[in-house]
Length: 207
Image (cartoon, rainbow, N blue to C red; front, side, top):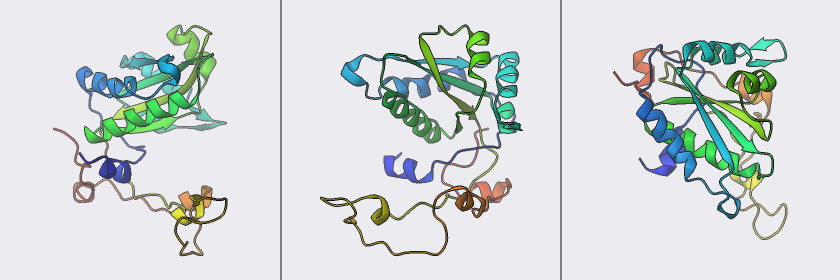
């Protein structure tokens, strides 16, 4: 798959099918993370793949934003718990996670990056040493929705040429919000019917 196509069409998925993912496919996703850049090639990021149903349920129950429970966490067929040595650079985690998200999408596997969960509980549950920070949960599952692309700020509003506030492209301007919570609320999602799923080049789940 062309990398530009993967970047443009990948979405965060919050509705998953009740279907297991072969372990060899999950390994391929983690392998993509292994090749992300790291400072001085120190390779300080660690990954725990969780496929056990009991562990998945317990971790999903800890995935909350204040009192709001992230119900899609309970639908995931698997999770990847991403940990970082406390002496390493956090930028390495971002690179590794993006590699996994794109690799999974290329394999028709949906993902969702979660940062709101009970880290102390997950640390105890999975016996993670305290030298490691728990940065994120990556949900994995075959998707049953085809979300529309969320609005993005125009390139001229975020990228400058040679000096600050010198747009690399002239912004077109819009009265609709392109960032923040309101922009998300204004983005309508497609329902998960078969015909709508086929609108995305990779949205049809595997048999």
